[in-house]
Amino acid sequence: MEDYNQIIESLSIRYIKAQNIDILRPISIENNYEVENTLMIINNGQLKYGKQKEDAGVGDILFVPGGKMVSMTYGQNEPELISKEDFLGNKESYFLSTESIDDSSVQDSFSYVSFEAKAFDSVNFFGSLDIPAFKIRRHEEIKQVIHDINIESSKTLPGKDRMVKILTERLVVELIRHILKQGLFVEQLATNSTYFRDPRLIDLFGFIKENLSDDLSNKVLANVANVSEDYVGQYFKMLTGINPQDYIEYQRMEMAVNLLRTSKRSIHEIGKDVGYKDTAYFCRRFKMMFGIPAGKMRRRESLSA
Figure (cartoon, rainbow, N blue to C red):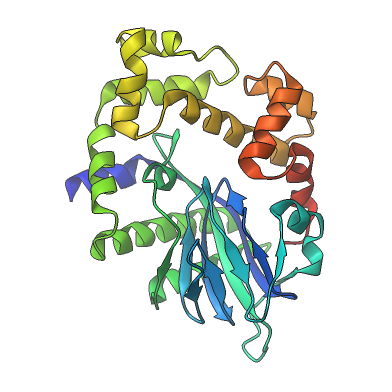
């Protein structure tokens, strides 16, 4: 248990967004992909998720880890099959953001909170577990925190940001407690608790984060970890389950998404900031990873939901 306490203490948790959503038209998105983690509770109707189209009904909570392509179907009736790009380009036709939950409404609806949870401020913790989206049945604590965050984030009271931060941290702890209590993903958690204690790996995580715009070849990484260039890729993958260059690309794209959301820098400038000298190549890789062009990722933030 002490290992898990250390993992929780290592996490930097950041609130991203929370909303209550009415589903105006049933839709199915096969290539749904988000950088951040999402916890959503179904208030009315149902959602389906994953390759097997598993059901999540009223009162169920669905966790979708960041960095995973997850098929999502919203609404009970026959859905319209659309791409992520088409959805983001016409989101207001499918989703309506509401300030509060209307218990008397017959409209299909859900509430969600999206957040980051990074170990050592570098590694997407839930993404590193390589776990699928999964359902949590009737968890009153998580349900209440999701609703509390939605209520608090809609206020303009002093201390709102601090309250949302505290509630989001509680939400993540409750989620991890549920995973541990139910004995979920035991092998993945055990692996994480092992490699998070490796100081060379922690040094690599920190170095990569601080130098995303620079050369991060295996030769450079080998010097940081003080291992041979031939071995560093094997070493990194053995501990994390992922090739170091794949990990670096994900970190670069994650930073690109954050810059698209928070700055007015051009696509060319953002590509350079995250280590891509060729803008066209950056744009191709971005669309391949997220299913939408970088420009549309920026415009999605101005939509109502």
